[in-house]
Image (cartoon, rainbow, N blue to C red; front, top):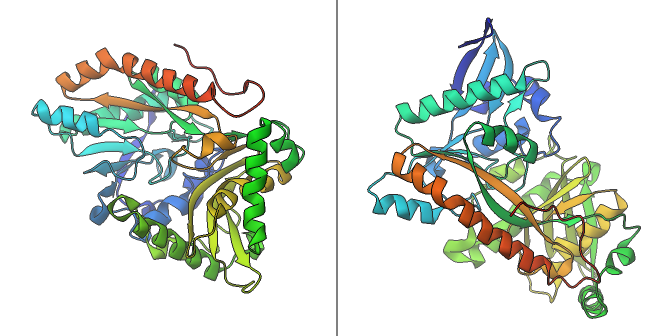
Length: 399
């Protein structure tokens, strides 16, 4: 391909290991999210967490000037919708009723990571708008040539979203539960935002954990060890097994083993220990951090302790976040427990394009109604948070 007399070469890559980590990270490191850095995505592939056997076939679009990588889109061909946390099964069912093959589909996201921030990676020396348009054209051609039903980008970067809407993608509104640091000086300051009843509840939950002799240690950077990374897998695996078919066990043991040492400064583990066994954790939560952001990913415990989940996954990370000037904490999928602990419903979007005319027409005709219903749900959740005043920093959405 050529644009404005500059020659670019497009390559579809099935292995990230065939791409220089240095060149990839030159574009990924400036992003606020760590989820598109080379080590994270390559670990997914080399550990067997993504690949043909799991239904996540890497199919990354890259643009080159000679042998210099100047743009990339992390993409996967999917034969199912698992591990995405944007539930499009209704679209798949509709396609079946119309006699349309919904799978395979082309998907852009960081696998198994429902955190906002997806966008094309573009070198700062390049014309981003021009290359974005060129990559969309290449994606369209690929999908039409190979009879791919649609292209979907999940948990997209808000600024990039506007570019893609201008290129004809339809936005689908969802929500996550994201804690925002409103200038809290310490954990008690965070507690002060709640009404008296919920403030007492949170204090009671933390005290119940301490009362049975459990204390926490935070492991990150130099205090992280290979043994702790493998212990995370044990807890993660155990938690997934408890939920059976719904357990969503996607990551392999090798994935966690390979986190060390390359990602020791990105991983934060909140480990719970008892007084009787101060060296072997009874539970832990696994988080990622970059800049002023914290992301909760997995948790587990071998013995059930009342309120340990809330402490490991919410209260200990929040206390650490305040102490380390973290501004946002996205604790991961789900929300039943989060909204009562200071995590307002926070909008995020996915972007979609269907290549079959019938599906495309239905998407265009009904997506606004779907988004209005989702906005109503967000408003209802945030109108009933147990706080003393409105959360003014929750982004507003056009209705």
